[in-house]
Image 1: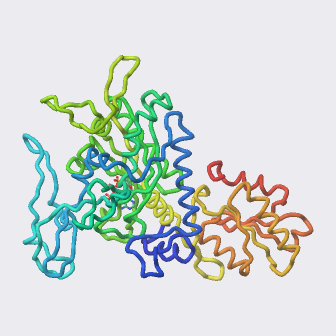
Image 2: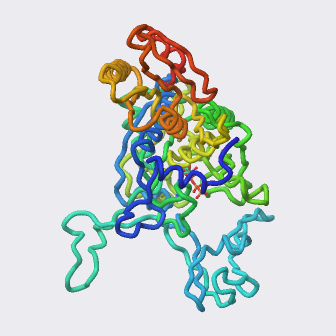
Image 3: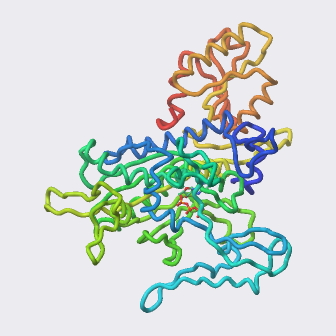
Length: 489
Ligand code: ATP
């Protein structure tokens, strides 16, 4: 079983401290969310598992942490200033604003035609009703750039005479982490002495001024990406791309997501970004409640073959037919010299790009299950993979007014602390405490009872089976270590 809808997770997440609506005491800020005590642990587990898998367990990947605010020229040459936009239309009657391509699927579609590609730029406003007021009185679609603008330094001050910002102070918050990797290609290559193929991984925040954010943490304006740029020789790109698609799909299964709720989506040619040769998305069944099966799915991660576009566009060398430099601003050439073949070329790039937030959402939805106890009460159990569980062990005293039991339980919690994230809880009866831990996905509850004082043993209760086992306190660390997979610790 998994969650019947995102809504089920929204209330659980708030009630138990995974995710709260942001700025709530001031009325909130549309589509901004804060990660609470359990959410931050879950997101950390996602980041750590990805980093361990991507960087530590392979021999060919380095890590990087580049700036969020980069030189504006990065976004000029990456193409974002010109093309990273959504087409907007306004309803003249009720002033509602929509994405033209969402209202009219034909709008902006590109199609291969004999003699080149063709983009459909006619918005069929005469046959499209406003979803808000039902009228048909549209403005002409216009591009809306998704990059957040800000201004840096003293020059950021508004010029009193002009009432405008000094243009040279304009910068953007990065809309993807990838460009920070491309502009550091030579730095990483030279300092790590890498040879092709090799990759550079980065985890960090990205920002997009999404026109229609929503669906909880699925689409927000501030989010976090886990991206890796894998540089290969041209000609070796297609095989590497397929290997990364398979590996990423398997990774989501390894962290506990059911393969039934995952699928691969091959982006049709007309949907591809201008630089991409092929892109495959890994989709998750985020919307199981929708009747139309096709609309159950949406993107969890994208794996693109970006060709040599990025390294070439940021290089000072390439020239057009008339011998004019395509990038007169760059001071470096980001080509690669192959010692073996004595050839110089621009590597191709395979990019697996996943969202931390969408992974957290998929994990929560996938782990959601309900079970009825012998009193006929329905309990929520979050069957998270052990490696993802925010808390691995809860130590619970059976009697909180008995100092010896409390003392023993606290000592056990402390002894487990160096090994795993453990908590002590005595704020309810044992049934309630078990239910609480089930609901947040804690794999093991350790109960200290009167008998424990005599036989130096405790009861370990399993989250999924509710079975209990008696374990000697002296064996507890080894027991927990064995039950949790190596990934979990
Ligand atoms: P979408 O089509 O859903 O807008 P995208 O194709 O633009 O996504 P990419 O540019 O491929 O997304 O970014 C890589 C990953 O970053 C996505 O697969 C997703 O997990 C995450 N991501 C992108 N935009 C957002 C957002 N607004 N909120 C949360 N996560 C996002």
